[in-house]
Image (cartoon, rainbow, N blue to C red; front, top):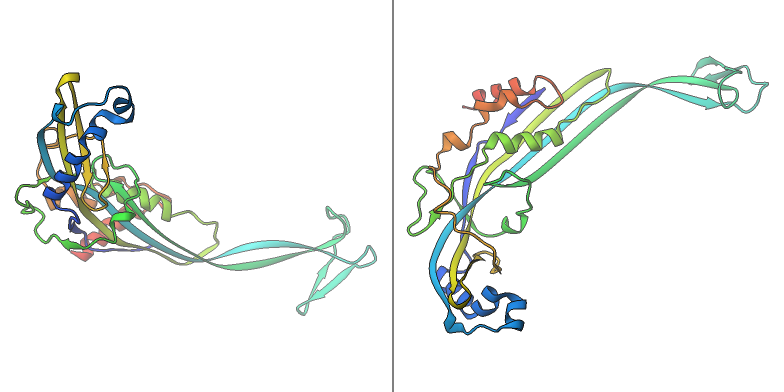
Length: 280
């Protein structure tokens, strides 16, 4: 099996809504957002009772992994062909004489052996939450303008909290690899190739606004998506919860744990390590 591994890259997706604009939009809707639909119907709060107590501008990580495979192989196949009647004893097919089996299941027939020449191609692209490592659809963010991060260790936009990914490259590559690399029933494999086309770490902008509804003793965090403009409650502030540095060697660790990448194909882990070494 031949494996090629694309260079790992990191990108920053540019916000489409500024922090100040988002703050105004959320503040204008704070009554409905904080109290909720049922709260506004049962006891409509006064806007002056809901106060903004803290904010957070952050960059949240997600992974994009794309892997393609190509397998060309031969496999043996037997075919059964019914003849026209019990009187038929032999059949000449493609200049070869074949004897009829009169006791075959389903009636008199001839058995043909053949070789099927097969080609299987797969290409899978998946996105994963950078914190949980769970497969999540972030495709709606991929069309927005982005800028490549050339110095991941020095990536620290002013006034923005860069959330450290908790899921590493190996974990997400393993999941996609298990989808793409599938065993085949073959007598001869002529070509077996896997191309890891993309291992991208992307950061998307999110704003968090914490409100205090004093008369109810209730605090609510509203998260605002700086790309789509969507606002939702039930969010959280991450700066006090997630610590750690964003380093390339820590996150792009395909070589470190690749030996544990057990997927159909057996020696793929060793070959993946070799692909990384050859590339570097």
